[in-house]
Amino acid sequence: MLLLFRRYHFHTYPVVSDRGELVGVIDQDIILEILMSDRIPRLKYTHLMAVRTLGKTARDVMIPHPVTISPDASLFDAADLMLKHHLNRICVVEDGKLAGIISKLDIINEVYERRGPV
Image (cartoon, rainbow, N blue to C red; front, side, top):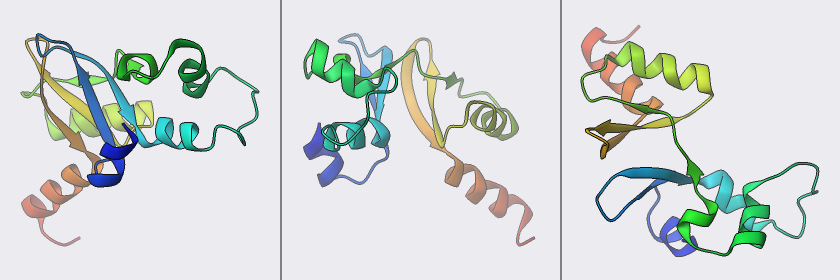
């Protein structure tokens, strides 16, 4: 997993089942917790503790049941979900399967293209 984050510069990776169904995500926060494992105080349950107790597979460290949106949702709906849940990106799911990931920057760029400079 660490190699993926180093080699490719995505902030979030989806975890999908053999059937292509979205089951979770792994983001930079989780990877940072793993890298800083000896320096993070154990004040609360973290994904790092999951790594230590459950193993090191993607399923062991992923955030299960991520916030998702349908491909037919509006940009406003996507932005609203991101702001409500303090997320920088959300998974787009159609019929239970991952269709893509949309980020705040994607929304900003699209709104800029539609409206022009503010």
